[in-house]
Length: 229
Ligand code: DC
Image (cartoon, rainbow, N blue to C red; front, side, top):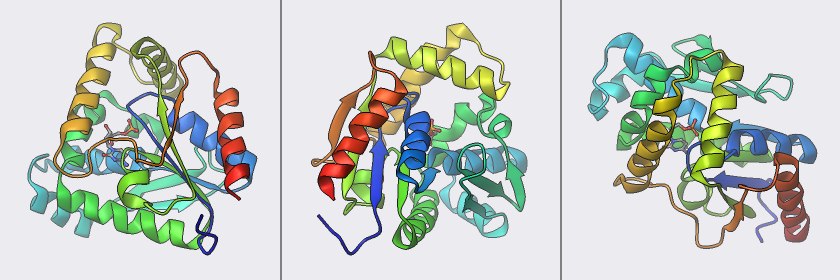
């Protein structure tokens, strides 16, 4: 393993597989920082809606980001372990998890220029500090030399249940009929896009969390981290 790098734990997986909760708890347990990169793509989608920018127009989105950058501040005392800013304003769970943001985030994140901008700041963070980073392409593209790579999966039923809890906690209206559809459609778009599609890295440890709780997943990840050191 690469001992010159600060510790990097990459956690990838499909929508609502538990990455956010598990990444946050793993980072706490290891005493290191946490970044859920989905929040950055959600911030771009939020700004696209606010500015009326076409979700398929890569260069217009990149221009929008030049004027209104998406930035993150890693802060263990923040509810998620990090804060996300879009156009200078802090964006909360309610903004980022809003149904209209979720509806366009896969399209927005399929744009190569948008991804390049996000990946630069993700890599800059991980080169400086030990971090747990969650997303879709962390083990494959963002941190290909991460010492620990996890691919977290769960059954569709478990993912629907978790997404419902997450939305309720964020104070977002839950439309039960559309939840399964939304999750499946995002998985399809995220796994079939041309740039950095969702996929397990060849050296990822696959963990199925359908029948185990978040604490047990964190136990498994911490055991893998301890072995890698
Ligand atoms: O993890 P999430 O549901 O908050 O992510 C929202 C969207 O962002 C997801 O549907 C695809 C995109 N995303 C991405 O393309 N790459 C990442 N590393 C993280 C998220």
